[in-house]
Length: 597
Image (spheres, rainbow, N blue to C red):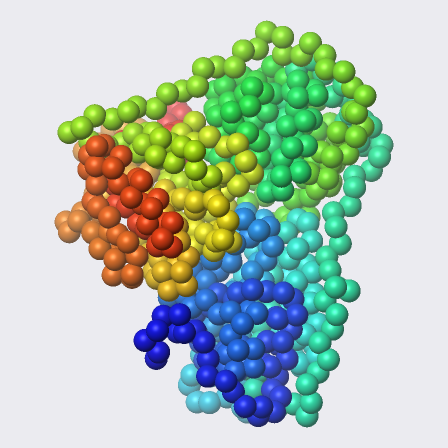
């Protein structure tokens, strides 16, 4: 292995030794314009691995070595959060795909485009080596993830594989987006070809742009909004494009409509805008519920769990407001997973892309004059965050306030936050200011998705910042190695409460209901004895590890040092010891039904 880190991924030039099945697949990946493939090596795709190195020269795409398959898929997911384009991940047959399933589910729930390749031992049993090829072969490997992918295939020839990749590429980028899977037979990869197959013109197989909604539905929606006295816009899964962002602001201002956003997903509207009516939240806040009860027209733009959100506001009553639901999500609902949530009522159901629909509404309302809407509404004062005092324990709100101050004036992308985070802790003024969470509640995805997002932000003037919980970090910590190895600078703060504290809250609530000792809630939850040195774990992988930090004065001194290290191209991790106990509303909402008597 070369000692020079710059050359560690540069292969020795290979001579022309003929054409192989996997060469055609590698060339097809290049034609798709993929810059990277994230992978954990496996013998089932050794042919493709060789072609990526010795046919493509490990360029276009470049391999990103990951220490776990879940990290490989999470990196591709994180890339899509920023770019809104698919990256490719490759996983080993059977066992590798089993490792990756949680990350695939996260991408599915996040409606993220992702091209996943896998492999199987020879389908032809006569070609299998004893033992190993048998346990690495499945008749229907796609069945492992079929319920949370848009499409999968196991092509039986090289031409079929090339078409399969084109189809997968098209499907994953067609709204509503989601992961796709192509399984490659090892015998197909290692088949010698008489000549190189022709690579098709990828431009002729591009995904269709989202169709505009029916004109009559746009007219009906525009008429309702023009007459509304208390219009409410609920901005859900929407694009990262600045033009779309500006259109959302313009529509809200034209209507005088109040706006709600969701902390589970990326920022969709500036939280500092006068019409942003409530801080983003994971579950509907009381302020948001009150506004939904007062509204006369509600437009939900691909809102995650519209039924549950309306139910939180109205309990068992029907909403008084006219509901306009704009989403394509129903086309992904398959009944295996309940990620589709409840079935919401809608007076007007527009099955179309939310941003396309919003632009159409803006055009239909071009001549609209703003009414005297929400005349009695006043924006609540901004909730302040505690400063912290030297010598006193740190908390998540104190950490958030320190980060707000330390990163003030910088273009910063908050890639991730822990469960104890709350929406008022971070301002969102640009579509890349906040990227949301994992989609499927898969703890352990944070380090991988943040590495992928930081890779997508590399070379921009934005600082990739993450605040992770210690449990999330420990499950996926080895993704930090990939970030360091490939020179992906980012800053990660760990809100380290030495516990799976969200579940301590659950245990406390259940204990109170059952009249059992609350003092036992920590058992089986706390990450202590021994205390894990997270900064040392980062340093062991080549990152800049700082901490543990226990005092506000030390924290404020470290933040500018972390920023300077990022400017030098370093991956930085800061272990901040915070007191458990802050509840952002996440845990309370999760156990609300348990406590009802």
